[in-house]
Amino acid sequence: MTVTPEHPTPQAAKTHGDTDLADLLRTTAARHGVPGAVIAVSHDGHRRTAAFGLANQRTHLEMTPDTLVGVGSLAKVWTSALTLRLVEKGALSLDQPVRRYLPGFTLADREASEHLTIRHLLSHRGGFNGESMSDFGPGDDALGRYVDSLSQVSQLHPPGELFSYCNAGFNLLGHVLATVDGATWEQQVRDHVTLPLKLDGVAVTSDEAMFFRNSVGHTVVADETHVVIPVQQPQRSCSPTGAKLRMSCLAVLAFCEAYLRPDPGDAASRFLSAESRAAMTRPEVAVPGSTMADHWSLGWALWDCGSARAFGHDGEYSGQSLFVRNLPDRGLSVVLAVNGGRDRAMYEDTVPRLVEEVCGVRMPRTPVPPEPLTRLPATKAQRYAGTYRGPHGTFRVSPAPEGHGLDIRATSPREAGRPQGAGRPERYAWLREDTFVAEGKGHGPYRTLSFVGDASGPARYLHNSRAHARADDDPAG
Image (tube, rainbow, N blue to C red; front, side, top):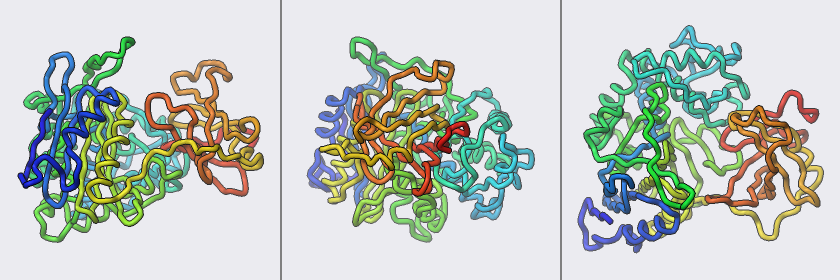
């Protein structure tokens, strides 16, 4: 266990609350089967960190606060910041079509291609299936070749209609950045984020990561022991969405501090203006069901916490998970990294508890089924019934007997060739309005989903962070 006070105080073993970081991390990691974890906290300018366990079970390398972790989708926030930098320079406009900067760009839906804007991409409103993680090699042309492949990607809804989390949109943004600026995405990260913020502990390529202490992802085998996930070369074509960027939790914390209280002329203005940083924490679009977040900005996820507001982002890549939460009104940033085990459950057991202890704010938690279960009216259940298709596969929804919610049979894209009736349905309880929560928990928090559409007719979308449109061949459509 490693504990590091960045600014020693009489409370050297604590944050500004009463929580001992080392004890909290040790307890929750053991409870949730996590082989290694780091937590970093900044509160009113005072930093505290703690580390637990191993960065690598195979080599027995200890986890430390300066160990680099795969930050996954936090890289999207960096891509957003680089985009707004070019907006500040006048080289990009948020509301101009992508085709203004990439004249040859096209999706399978040609009309959608014409209307897709930079703002749509930043706020996950592009409307196309964004799950492609195809590898196009290590060369500088990887992003361009990836973007060319989007010509075969289907459209889920018109651009701008609603939020649907889209990985591919940020790879597309990365190619726009490289085309307009002339420097690769990686070089722009070095020159315009890492350098002006004076961040230490950042690697944008695998070659750079070799010079640091690194954590690796782990998975559980049959006898409940952790083994290292076999190393795979991350795709350069997916760097802007999170495939390659590695950081220490201290570097993540320093990046977050630039957004806590943006002020014209502050040190972080060398990186991005206070106005642009503030824009990245203002709502752009509501997130259906408010389970992944309440709103999304031009970069960060946003949560309503009663008297306080919060922004942050999660990241996952190859068995590693990162959770970032910032409460600017309280001067608080919390970063948690784990490298295996029940990652989401560990977050739920650690970060909200710490936030409440330090500043008295209750962060949203993943919902649980109500007790007793709420009866779902038959007319409402019929509105949801039907077949929906999208990034996560096919969902067949039917009313459960006696008003006990919905039975949902999911078929992933990998299972698309199986018979229509394959797989067992899962029961979802009615939580509130158009949102449902799975009655079975599995190894992590309960899954939730929502339905979107005019309340007077059949739902148009099933939404679980991604939009799944009602199938054209569904009679209810």
